[in-house]
Image (spheres, rainbow, N blue to C red):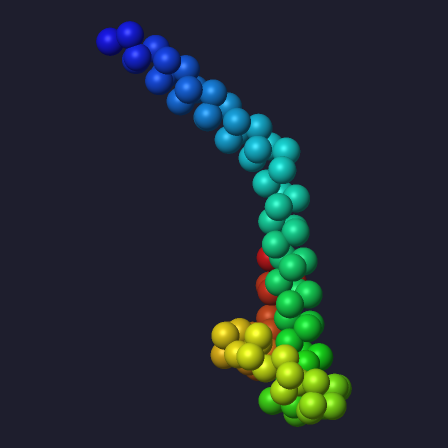
Length: 91
């Protein structure tokens, strides 16, 4: 029974920390993740653009990077070839 107030205090403090994070840093972390995704998207476009008909780098360098890019190729091709809508730019 002596541990209950301590657990309640820790739960309350963790909720306060989550609220403070949500108010201050959540938007920044979402923006950083979105920026990272767009940079990764651009990197794959530059290195593996031959797959969709955009030759930018010589094939030698693309083949050297291929083992690192293979897990992302299927989703990248889907993102590149899907139809764009006005609402995509909003979110």
